[in-house]
Amino acid sequence: MTADNQAPLPATENGNGTNGSSANGHLRTKICVYCGASAGASPAHIEAARQLGRVMAANNIDLVYGGGTVGLMGEVAKTIVAINGPKAVHGIIPEALVKYERDGTYQTLTSKNQVVPDESVYGRTTVVADMHTRKKLMAEEVFNGGPGSGFIGLSGGFGTMEEIFETTTWNQLGIHSQGIVLLNIEGYWDGIIQWMERAAQEGFVKPANKNILVTANTPEDSIKALREYKVSDAIYQLQWGKQ
Image 1 (cartoon, helix red, strand yellow):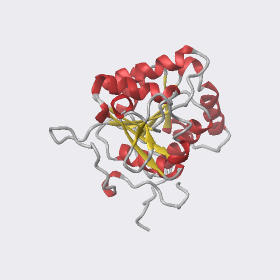
Image 2: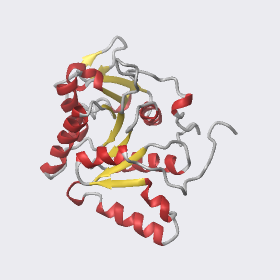
Image 3: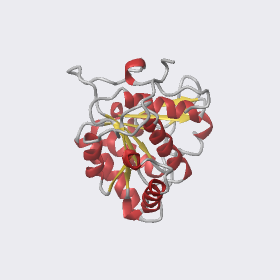
């Protein structure tokens, strides 16, 4: 839940339709990728980011992400833009993070005197006031996407883990029904997968709900997992915003 105690709005209640429809009027598939602003020690992480971008572009899937130009974030974004153009990517970044999550080589000054990534390289960028607004807007854009829309967690640190688990919690609470996939590169998420099993065994997570967060070992399989995602029967059947 966001800091102002407002859950992200489900698609039927959210008016954000930016780049939401294709030329034929169908909703475009949108995937929010959570990942690190670092490249990681193993080259497998950066290659996975590039391959995910290539697979998303080949399937005409739009990217929603944290708006950075460095590390895995920047690699996914610029890979998709290079293939499908800047309209296929939307980065959302808090103003305070702009100087940390961008490469100084690429910067554009907006009419509001905000420094943002070069749109022709990294796609469209929206600068927001805080982290909570960033996460809320990213989620709502996915909620308004077409079939196969959802969330993918590439390798990352504390911020990536927090985003993945918050989105997973929202699913458990019935706030949304989109899939969440851990893209497990070289066993990076093995510890989290083991923890989910233990949490279910110890009774802290309902056994059916441990599969709210699914795993895949390749970018191709992560896209497939989102297309085939099934909501757990054990989630809370809550009516958000209708109390």
